[in-house]
Amino acid sequence: MDKRLILGTLFSYGYNHWLSSCPSRRVRRLFLQWYLGSLGKGSGVQMGCKFLNARRIYLGERNVINFGCLLDGRKYEIRLGNDVSIGPEASILTLGHNPQSSDFADRGGEVRIGDRVWIGFRATILPGVTVGEGAVIAAGAVVTRDVEPYTIVAGTPARKIGERNRDLCYHLSFDPLLQ
Image (cartoon, rainbow, N blue to C red):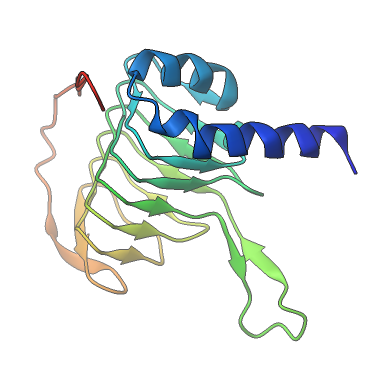
C-alpha cells in the first residue's frame, strides 16, 4: 500500500476523531494550516467538522465553517472564496456513485463556492456544483446543479426562490472562545 495513502488516512483519522473535538481554535488552526490545501487568513473551523482528503480543500480568507460540517475532498477539489459562511452540519461532497453503473462506479466533480456565499444549516452541495458569488443556500437545501451569483435557492432539489442584494461589502469575523 502507498505510504502517502497510509499517512493521509492516519492524519485524517487523527483530526476527524481527536483534534476536531479540541476546544482550542488555535490548536485546530495550527493543524489545519498544515493539513488543508490552504486555510486563508481569518478563516475559522469550529469543533466537530470533518474533512475527507483535506489536501484537496482550499478555504479562502475569513470563512466561517460552523460545527459539524463535512467537506469531502476525496477525489476532487473543494475551493471556497472569501467571506463564505457555512452553517452547522452542512455537507459539501465531491464524490458519489453512478446509480446506473452495473459495477457501482464512482462519479463526481470539483465544487467551487464564490465569495460571500451563505450556506444554511444542514444544506448539502453535491459533486460538480459551482455556487456563484453572493448566493444563498437555504437551510436543508440539496444543491444538485450550479447556482447563479446572488441567487437564493431552497428545497430538495434546490430551486431559485429569490435574488440577494448585490451591494455586499461585509467581511466575516467570528472567533468564539470555545468553538
